[in-house]
Length: 279
Image (cartoon, rainbow, N blue to C red; front, side, top):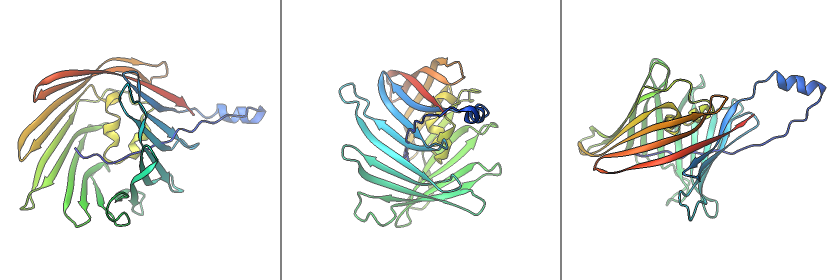
């Protein structure tokens, strides 16, 4: 499945407590924000925020005990309405700029799409992909159309939701030579778990991928199917268990099991731990 790039930056600040400032801060309830994901004892990724609690940087690490170094990071920029307008991706080592996305909005503030640039491509000043978003009657992202610079279809997504607004199904299509849509992948999310995504809400800023990133706290199972010309090539099932919560309701730890159903191969069991900041 094609994944669009993403990013974040952790911001730490000190409060100067005085007679008046203390009273003001006490009246503002602090918000838990996901700051680190630990994968089998290794750094998985880290998230950073502005002083307005906007997600500004996302660091992803190599998942290797020998090399758990920073691999990729993304930065996010916002306009004066706190709308995501720019996402930049860099690869390591060397902080090499690799991709940049610019997001567009209509006059009602609804995100309508993005333009992507491949900064390591043959012509980095020319858009490489153009994404267009349409919404359902509940004002939820309903379809995403992504086209190449020559106008050919790169990918087409349809999404459906549970009554609480969490993702239910996400289907991806490509285009045949006769310009018919052809299913290439299907993702089915189980009925969401109530009150388990606290601290993960900022990921919703990422269109299409936000629900994917927040799937572990939200769902007990996720089924994935990948097709090639209508033939099922791969089917995996992700399941979570042994959940532990912190006293504030944030998810502390869980076990994730990936079952490889088609083709059959041994299950993969991984331990995820989650850390948060309060600001």
